[in-house]
Image (cartoon, rainbow, N blue to C red; front, side):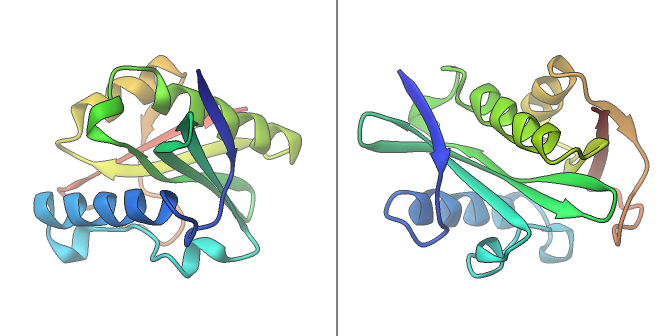
Length: 149
């Protein structure tokens, strides 16, 4: 059974997955196109970080960054061994439930242009493609999506 619960970026298991995610993004995209939050930034007051676990093993991460007028989905990552088990969907449901509980009107996200499985996941959960938001600018390696809540 997949359990999704609040976590901290330096917690055992969570930290390692976040570091794996950062390494993967840096291997796929230019450093300028990597918009992940560093571990200390994920501990900020406006961030709700979640870890998914199966037993004692942390198998996924996801975060909600509270912005002015919306929430941003950040740090979505599933361990390679757990892909296809519904981990990302469970994390995304928790992020959306948290955003709704905070009365946020929308969720937005930036993801990589070649992360097709992520695009499909977000579309299955009601996200649609949109333009840049916040401090993001149009970039060939970025895809932007949103969901009204």
